[in-house]
Length: 166
Image (cartoon, rainbow, N blue to C red; front, side, top):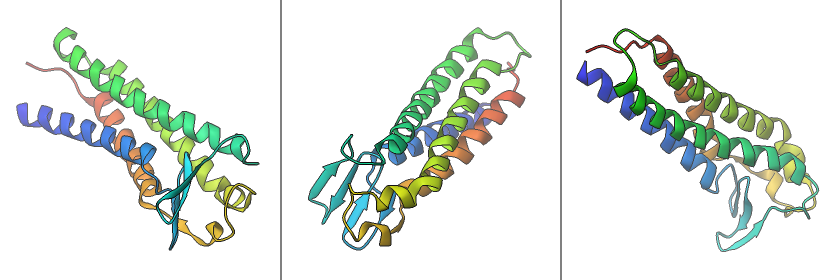
């Protein structure tokens, strides 16, 4: 039972780490001499410009930023709730609250990645980007966001099925 508990904790921490990396790192869309994410555009790694109201597609980036931050916060809160429920639940009860919070985190990261998938062409063709940005490809942070979606979904379902034992 202790091995299962350790696996669940490591799995949850891995999910949170994936969410932190995909939210913070500048690699949602990459090319030869540039990288961009939901926060800034960097050319030659040193020349970075923040994505702000001056960008015509800022209203598309803003919900992506918000839902990625929210998913990361919810994942961390779910971990704290799980630790609290380990000590507070009676034997045989399920971790429903932890599961609900983790599934909400899953939903938020899915929304963010889906919006970016749908809007990336419009985002990179707007006037806030250089002319070579549309020639890029999805970066590892974008892929990590989708992997984090799968991890949070699996852990949310795992918490729903899991019962507290001795």
